[in-house]
Length: 111
Image 1 (cartoon, rainbow, N blue to C red):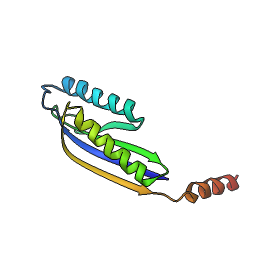
Image 2: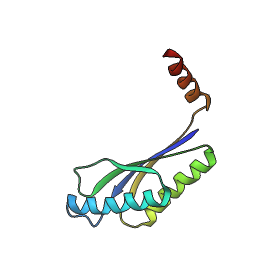
Image 3: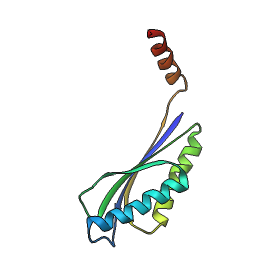
């Protein structure tokens, strides 16, 4: 199993209030979630009306596929032109398939 996660810091140029920020941010989050079927949410800078920090996660079986999907998510958000991307941080983590199976067996055998 491979997990790709990212943090994106945004600058919302057109925002003049928290309400306007939320509207722009909701459009970014919903469009990205609909396009890629990923988990994505605001994770920071909640009280700043021009800054936003969002996080997302992608899970799959192939590292190259996950890496490509993360790259596509970053490009998609940038190409929406709803906010300027200030900084991005991504992490791709591999997990052996046997970990989940062993934990399940251990829990099952305890009963």
